[in-house]
Image 1 (cartoon, rainbow, N blue to C red):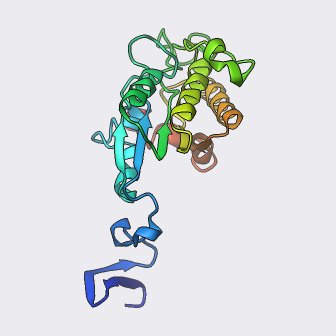
Image 2 (tube, rainbow, N blue to C red):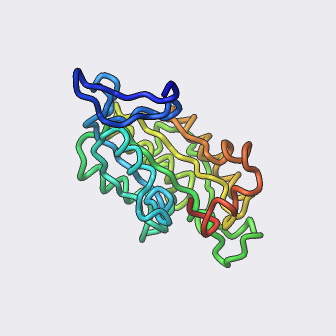
Length: 231
């Protein structure tokens, strides 16, 4: 067949044909083609990062499996970005810093539980669980200026801690998809603030919210999400 290919190692074939449209499995790539093989990946975040609703397989799991990386996953369902004293992403970061000496790639998300409406009414925009807060006036004094009880303060301080501990790591924030179970105005407000913080601190981000909005503006919030939150 001219629309399929087979990979061979010298005189040994892998015994399977792949469509030309399919990506080559990473296990068949030479190490030089997979620079992440054996590298350390850290992931932080909420239930979306943790893979709730997907049999516990989250974003970090897929990436670590594809690129043969060593994953340390600290994400946990219900976690907020803002420090709440019980379950927050900043605590995940501080735990990782004390346990993992080196990281090559860091992934984190965080917003879904910060914008959960305390009263359960998703039409409200003034009762988010964690307040948005303000950007610190100077990133050079983030340790004394950041209000970590807010979304913005905790995110800025968390990024500062990661940059200090892992200065050579690739750090990527994942802005999650549009969720039908969350107020859309809050998703946009907090999501845009997160992007602004990433740009301010010079870290990379993946904006799934706008990527999917441009393709599935209405059905993405419900049809592709079993509980209107988790993919």
